[in-house]
Image (cartoon, rainbow, N blue to C red; front, side, top):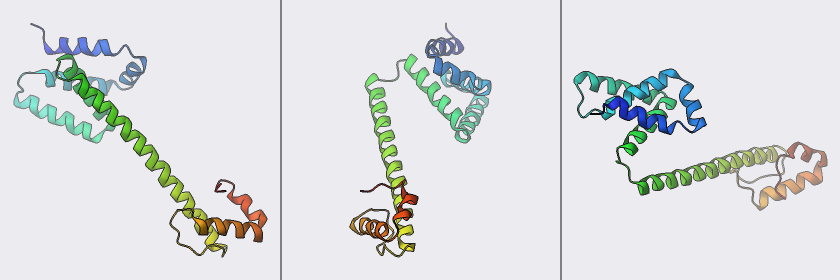
Length: 167
């Protein structure tokens, strides 16, 4: 009979072929040892009270450390995949959802950054007395008109605004 350490080691070693994965794993022996221990516990058919306490302790450590949490989740994935517990279509759906989340996050981050810059621009134009609209981060007709007025009144002032390009 194969013990849980052998099952995990076999699964783990096969998946370390990716050099980036290997580099990340060797970055911290503490994480590697904890992840190995976690997977060994996860593969046991039943847990003693001491095992349950240790599993809870490891999960608490993961909740406090994002890198460790990542590796614990990867350990869960490797174990489940090797034991045939994950459907490939489920994995593809998760990857697709992750891609959508990343794209959405990047777009949202870009939009928030753009609005912040636009608010700074509108506040500057307001202090110059050429913008009287709300400082909402949206460059509309009144913001563009204020930029034109500033250019007419103080042509050199726009040199300070070269990072803003709205024309």
